[in-house]
View 1 (tube, rainbow, N blue to C red):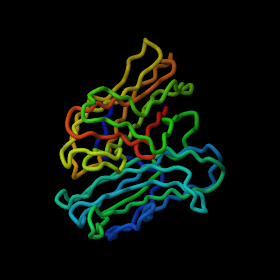
View 2 (view 1 turned 30 degrees about the horizontal axis):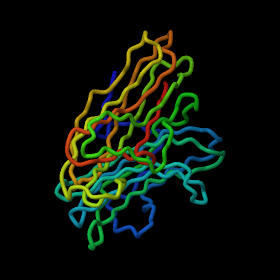
View 3 (view 1 turned 45 degrees about the vertical axis):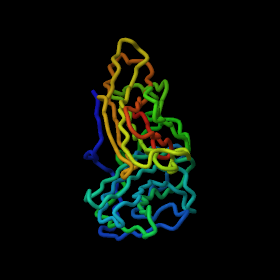
Length: 301
C-alpha cells in the first residue's frame, strides 16, 4: 500500500505546543536562525530516546507580494545549542491566500537531558522593502510519544548537500537512500516517510543552486516516486504512484511528502531499503536540497 502525502494529513499528537495566532512577522535580520513561534519541551530524556515530531503553519498577507517564508524545527539543549533540525519554506504570494507549510523531524536525543524543540517561522524580502506577513496558525507536536530506538532508522544526513538537475538532465536520480534495515521481531507494518525539498535555478543562482547564469524566469517540471524494497523476493516492492509537479521562479521553493507503507508478514521479508527517484521533465534547472531540508526515516510498528 502506498500513501502520497502532498497535502498536510490529519495527525494524532501526544503533545502539542501552539503559536500565538495573528502574530505579525517582520523581516528577519541577516544571520538570524528564525523567530521562535512555539516550543515543545521534551523533559528528562535518556540518551537515544526517540520522538517523531511534526510542525505546521499557515501564513497570509505577505508584503511585498513575493517574499521568502521559512519554517524550521530546531531541537536544542537548554543552552541553545541546536543538536537536530528540519527546514522547509516557500515564497509567500499574497494572491495565493493562506499558505500552509509542514515538515517532520525524527529526533534522537544525543545525550540524557531536557530538550527544547522549537518551531521557528520567519519572512525575508526579495526587495528593498522589508517583508511582513501574518501568522494565521502554527504548532509543533509529538506524533507518537516515546518510540523504541530499534523501530526507526533515518537516512544519512548530508548537511548542505544538493542534487543538481541541469537544463539538459532527464536521467533518474535516487535521493534519501536508507539501506538494509531489519525490522524488530513482532512488527507488522513498515513505513518510510520522505520529505523532499526542491529549489529551481534562475538568474544568477544561489539559495541552494550553484552560482551561474540561468534563464531569468520560467518553470520546472519534475516527477518523483518513493520505493520501499524488501531483500526477500517473496515479498513485493511497495511504492507511491509517480507524481508530476511544476513550480515556477516566483514560488522558487517547493516541498512535499512521499510516504510508503508495507505490511510485514509473520515470516518476515528480510531487510528493507528505500529511496526516492527524481527525474527532471522540462524547464528550469533545479536542485533537491538535502539535510536539513530533505529528510527521510523508516518506522516499524
